[in-house]
Image (cartoon, rainbow, N blue to C red; front, side, top):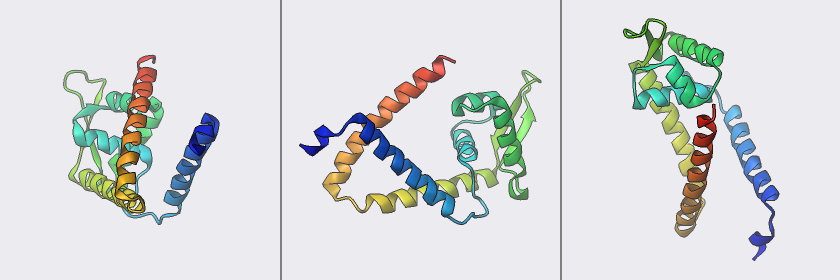
Length: 157
């Protein structure tokens, strides 16, 4: 079987090249009014599931430095003059800031998510149905392993 002769290094390089291709394609897409950075999208995504959250709670889930998280939140507050998030002082601990998603932020989150899902749908259509099933089986294994590693790494901090 030809695949069994490939080394892990070669496989990792191919996955990296796919990642690079996706990043390059994304960078060439024209910016829309609701264009978000990955960190901005992750922030809105986290808030779409649970809010309000403190800046520190969001920062820990995303895994960025506190100063970067503050810049992201500030940018989302001012985004396109509409404000995608709203910040308020935490009532229990006045040193903390609670962040909530605004309706404009929820709309931007949904638009970004829909655009990315549409791109994935188009890519998956090139696979035959039985190949999609096999691909998804393997993808779930990789996702589980990656999540276990990521969570283990975050618990060390």
